[in-house]
Structure formats: C-alpha cells, structure tokens
Length: 83
Length: 479
Image 1: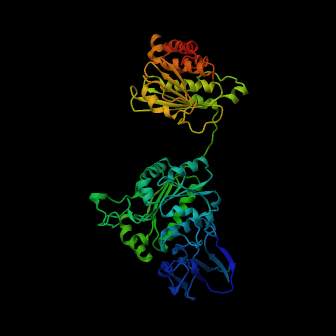
Image 2 (image 1 turned 45 degrees about the horizontal axis):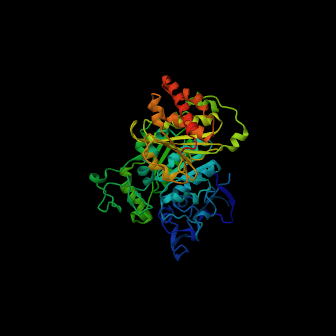
Image 3 (image 1 turned 90 degrees about the horizontal axis):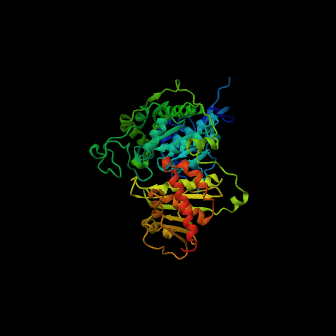
C-alpha cells in the first residue's frame, strides 16, 4: 500500500497503541513476533486494561496493525530504507 | 528517519459520528471480533484502489448492520438476507459503482440463501464478503446453518445433532459449483498469515469487480469471542481446532483469467416499443385531446368486481384502454383466486390526468358490483358521493349507503336478451360512460374489436354497449 511517508525524529521503527481506543483483546500482544507489547495495569475510559508498546524491540513489521480489529487503535512507523 | 505509517485507512470516517454516544472513534464490535479486521482490510483496499467514492457497501442484518457507521462510502442497509438482491439492483442501475454485499452466516446462509445463490448463478458483477462465525452472533449465539456438529449454542444447548439439525452448510463450496462465479475463496482471521491471505483475497474480489469480471465471493472464518465465550486469542485457536477441519481455507474456484469482461450497455425504449411488447399497440389510436379536457378530467378510482367469468377483468382492460386512447394515465391491476371460473375476481382501474402512484384502488369513487358478494365486500370502501353501479339482475339487495350515487341496471338480463350473457360487462361500460359523461362511449367501439379475442363476438359486444347507453337514456332519473 502507498503508505504515508513522513519524517520523524527517532531513528528506529516503533508502534503506538492509542490507549483510549484499545479494547484489551490481547491479539497484538499474542501475535507480536518481538513480544514487545504488554498490558498496562491502568484502565482506559472504555473500561479496559489497555495494551502499550514496551518502548523497545519494534521492527515495524505491521503484524500488530493487521491483527488488531480496531480501525485506529494501532499506528506503526516502519523505517523506509534510503536508496 | 523517514517512516512509512500504517494507520487507519482513509476510507474510514475520521470520527464515527453516525454511531452517536461518547465513543465515536471505536467500533461497536466486541474486543477481538473479526469484523473489525475485515473492515480494515476492505477500507485499505478501497483506499489503495482509489474507488471509495464510487463504492456502495450494503450492510446486512447482524452485528455488521452498522457497517455504515464506519466506512466512508455509499451505504444501503438491506432487509435480512436480501443484500445480494439489493446489490443486483444497485449494480445494474449504476454499473460504474463498486457494490459490496457484506453478510454474516445467519444472513447469507440461512435467511438469504435464495438471494445469494441466484445472484451468484446470474453472475452479478458484485463482491460478496461472507463472514462466517458459526452462529447468529448479534442475537445471542443461536445455531446457524454453519454451526458445527456438536457445537453448543443457545438453541442447541446439548450441541448440534445431525439427526435433528442436519450438517453445517459450506457456502463457498456450494457457490463454487455454479457456472457463473469467477472467484470463490475461503480464508480465516486467526493470525497474521491468514489475515495477510485474507487481505490478498479482499483485493482480488474487489479488483475483479473493478475490471468487470463478474461475481466474486469470499468467505471469511471470523472469531466471535463473546458468542463463543472465549478470550480473543482462544477464539482464534477455536477456529484453528474446530472450524478449519470442517471449513477448509482454499481457493475453490478461479476462472478470473478466462472470464470475459462484462460489457454494460444501456438502451432507452420508446413508448411504441413498450406497447408493442405488451401487445397494447393495437388498442386503437391515441386521440388529440384538448387541454381543457385533460385539466378537468375527474380522476376515476375504479373497483370492478364480480364472479370469475363475468368479464370483470376484461371490462377493466377495455375501460383503461379507452382512457389511454384519450391520452390519460391509466393503470389496471387484477386480483383473483386460483380458479378461472366461478371464483370471485376484481380489478382496480385508475384513470387519471396526473401520473399515478399506486395502481391499487382502496377507496374507489366508482364501484361496479356485478354480484352480491362484491357489493358486500366493497360498499363500505366507496368514498362519499362516489358512484355504485349494481347488476340488479343478480344483486338482490339495495345499497345501504345513503351518501353515494347509485345506478341499478339489470346487466345480465340485457346481455342475455342479446344472446350473450357474458356481454353484461360491456352493457355496464356503455351505461357507465353515458351516465358519467367522462368520456365518449363511442371510444368503446374502437377498443372492443382489438381487445376481444373471439372476433365473432365483437358485434354482440358493441350491441351490448349500445344497450347499456340506451338503458341509461331511457331510465335517467328513475334510480
């Protein structure tokens, strides 16, 4: 897909779980190849313990984005290789 | 660094305002529900193919009834199971649109079995996404046709038994046996691999339609953690363990490459062609009529009723044809029992100087009662000051209403004297036109020869009209 390509400050791939959209189904946590997503102990406004990125380990593979059933709950920043 | 961003595809609304309530950025789906994954894949494909603006998504009855909350495309919500029929209409009326029928297993495999099979068999150029979770999810996990043998549901609390409920239906396999469909696949939403495969299949199914290749069908095995009372990961495992052995994921049919690209053509038909096809072009010449006649024409909402065989329906056809030849708008719609003779029959005829909405006459201003039961049935429906014509040869009672105009004529007797009892209907039409003066009774002379099938009876029928006219003239004011 023609992803939006943007310039970001950090230099490694990463992901973001939008905490107030997460329903805590655990699919991203289960399927992440790097095991770098975990549940927080906090509840969000929907009443779920939500998932969050551990802060390190993401390779930008996009698995969590596709296994997540919520349209906007996960955003992945893949590294674009300079040619 | 330069980053490619994977995020909510733009074919989704930014905010789900139609959903209402406090949380307009999340779906109404339960945690771990496969609908969300599939919505995402469809939205992504529509975004990438740049066709969202000409896409119409038909949502079914089921949990995905609210798909129109989310996808920023044209939306129609169809009655239960009818999405493929609605899709047929939408696609044929607007071949440039991309029409998606999105259905669950209760909707598609039970209630709408007829619609999906025939849409598939006709090879409609639509994309069907069939979400199979082996139960009726929305209503509380009742058994569906796709429910597995032994599976406990609300309506099979001891498990589905073959002896009682039969076997699960494999829709993809069934549809793949038909000639017309070009692409039939089943995938699952149980891990990244299967979701990636579903993503490719979603694109294939949409691409086929964009290229006008014909009917494409994708069945998706989708977890229902709530209905199955499992966690989201366990629900995926349940599909792996129990559904996959019964519902294998594979491409069952792919004739996309051989499929001829459908060509859409549109043709306008002239009034003359339509009349020819309906066999109505022979009903006499259309007259030039004055604007004054058209403007002042009193709309006739007619109910003509009697025994089958009394010529009730043909009287309606004849009088409607008269109106048509006078450049008026007319409708005729019959209502009769299964028997050709001896039952009761009636027809609604509307003759109007304006376009007619419904052809059904429920409040007639003209009632022709050829027999007693017809008077009993329709007398109360006549509007105040309406006209009631009674065949007094057969109807034994008087009209009870005091607020209607009545015309008693021994129709059968007059016709019988002419040697043709069946011409009572034409006696009636002659009397009706002479009495009301809404049209010239001589119009009947033009129409009758063209509508009466037995040509040797034409003369008698014309005499019958004249007898009806004569009766009214002689008995004016006596009723």
